[in-house]
Amino acid sequence: MTYRKSIKVEQDDITDEISKAFDYQFNGTTSFEIPFLPELPKEYGIGLIVGASGSGKSSLLQSFGKEQELFWDESKAICSHFIDATEAQEKLGGVGFNSIPSWLRPYHVLSTGEKFRADLARRLNTNSVIDEFTSVVDRNVAKSCAYAIRRYVDKKDLKNIVFASCHYDIIEWLQPDWVFDTTTNRLTVGRGSVRPEIELEVLPCSIQTWKMFCHHHYLSGNINKSSRCWFAIWGGTIVGFAAVITLPCGTLTNSWKGHRTVILPDYQGLGLGVRLSDAIGAIHIQNGLRYFSKTGHIRLGEYRNASKNWRPTTHNMEDRSRQYARSIKNKPNTFYSKELMEKHANRICYCHEYVGQNELL
Image: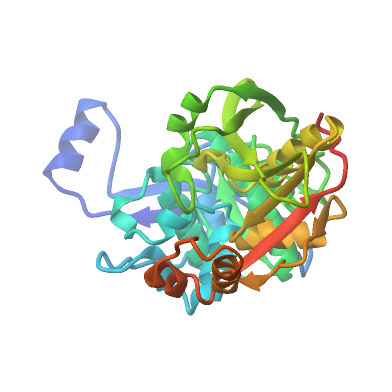
């Protein structure tokens, strides 16, 4: 069922000329239909209003509240618009925005996809409403962002968030607790759709492939020239890159360590980074080799801490400056500048060995 809503606008020379040109009777009053919303669950995580343009989505969304207006200070990094660093990391990561260099840039220089995620990160709270969800971004960004949001909402136990969108392809990725279709006036309650399987194909590649990814690494665009490299393909598209180097150690043989892992920004938020990392580990142990990895990336490090596929090594979660100091003690000729040691003084480093298998291979 629907009801009709009327509003008045000021008549002027332009409205008069247009209405006469098209022989349209206009007296300053315009009306449109808005669907009646059926009774909804009192408490839910995510609700979605979906339908064609002009079907009343935005008007219906207003019954849940007003979308938060945002101000972005051009003199500040986007991460500085949150309460503290912890909230910035959690919320930006929660919408699949995992590019640390972009976190430190002002809003006006971000790409359309990055702006979309940054806006979502600030608006994503209990009882928030978000209009035109995913309408301005590439469909891959839309799907990855929807997937990341569902995980974040569940993790933080957020309640009664309502989205409006004209795109149906996000439903299986967002997994809303209810969907109201303004085109059919149909309400569906429950996560009825099944999220698609994500299958990565991991193939060896030339080190030259790094040029596609070097600007997206969270620490450095450099790469060791002796690296062994792979790229990850999803749905026929290259989405990720991984590189490893040998691990020279007197007590270990046939050992390698992770050097670079990057997922392109449009595909962040789907968990592809940890899948690729696991796949590279599996490739090594299946060939009788040992595989180690060290990272300062919190999300990747915490994943490994919780995963049965990875075993913490002796210096896991140790202050990196202590590792530098130990290296200098063991190898007096090793050079680490005072500036570098101070830079990493409070930076925790996650250290693990891959010991599991990977079903992706």
